[in-house]
Image 1: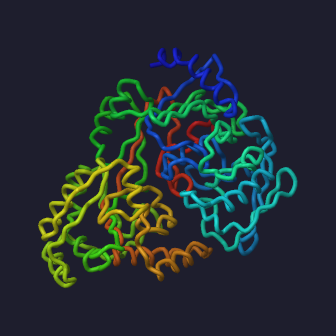
Image 2: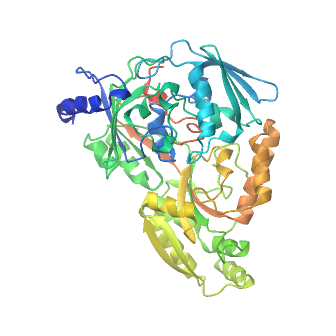
Image 3: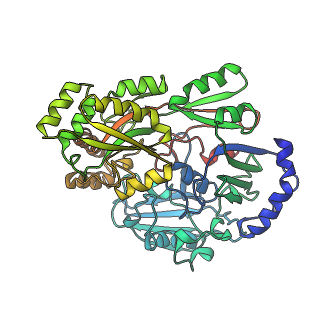
Amino acid sequence: MRRLFFSGILLAILVSLTLSGCGPELEDDIETALTLPGDDWGFPSPFAFYPRGPGYIRMSLLFDTLTWKDEEGVIDWLAEEWSSSEDAKEWTFTLRSDLTWHDGQPLTAKDVAFTYRYFTTHRAGIQWSWPLDKIADAVADGERRVTITLNEPIADPHAMLFGSLPVIPEHIWKGVDEPVRFTGDVAVVGSGPFTLVEYNKEEGRYRYGANADYFNGRPLVDRLTFIKVENEALALETGGVDAARFWGKEIEAVRALQETGEYASIEGPSFWVLQMIFNTQKEPFHQVEVRQAIAHAVNRVRIVDQVTHGGAIVANLGILSPFTEWANPDLPSYPHEPERARDLLAEAGVSDLELELLTTGDYAREAELIEEDLEAVGIEVQVRTGDRTTVDGLLREGGFDLAINGHGGIANPAMLETPTWPAGVYQNEIYDQLYAEQAQTLDPERRLELVWELQSIVAEELPVLTLWHPKMWTVYNPEKLDTWFYTDGGIGFGIPLPMNKLVFLER
């Protein structure tokens, strides 16, 4: 693989010339290269990446934020210090003095102020859930000082905004009217530890080069490549990739790799959830009794046992991970009781129910077991599978009855904003008011009460039926890189991946 990599250097140089706005040209003396499994997660600009965790990660390697997170919590990043007003509406940040963009231009407070104003005025079409409507203004005071004013306080401002919103260069973006469509070479000029060498959508390939002038030191690897692979375990064993991520039902592959003694591994927190989403805007799923009946019909314990073989736990019905302080420990339960399910359906006046269960191929086995459980109580189910992008699109459009879908970030109460995400079919005015209140509540005890109340509503109303929280592992070749870790609470909003940019930096 190393010989193949070197044989491709000439091609990479030619590619870099076509991406002249992305940073310096490739060097001939590449010392270290790391290859990781991946897929297409969209063009890695702050506006065009696919709105899921891996898409954000691809972008975060190129762009920085005011603050960041390490294993334990918030740390300084572009900003070396900050303070806020007593009401937490006015935040002042002092930037480091050695910041530059990939093209050599200085990064100043004017860029930060521009970024926050630009995102606010161009938020149409942005699918990542930054609270952009909470930004009132951003003003630079000299080269290094910027003040950001909020309309109302944000309960977790670093995770939700300052530590997750990428700072963009004014000299590139000030004339761009449609940022989501802007995918030119200079759209990926950031200040991050890497520059983009190549993005190949069809092959799901990303190639990054080390930013030798990075303020936090040159990365530990000169070239970082993500490639699409069919079998991560096999790719790791054959040397096609240098690390692989596993979760849930892949536990047997982890055990097999660990038994070889050739690899190191780390286990991560279960900040992810698989759930079945009800389209509460369609009959008869608008009736809570029907949703509760289905909850009693589905044997979640059997699904976890037969599908994951010990690689997951039965999920918290309030969505949030039971491994965080936010999880409500006192929620109603729906034990597997087919007779109770039949009674609830009869009480709701529902009989001869036929429905479509939408999912991706990854969850085909879960769908089969749910189909069996529902048919046992008289509900006829047709399973429909599609790729991830198609399924997410149908969820956003409301084109489904039931759907199996998963997402990370569930260590963060922000994931409760739309319980049926990426669908937005659930409507509850009281719930929305409670969410808005907790999102700006600064008192930790009061906020916890509100978050627990939100989870109670989710568990009682059941806009979703959570299925399982997976265990997670990263197995890797320690000779190539031995700095992997999972971020406490997840990266940014709560992305449960071991791809914190600190992994690639000397600390």
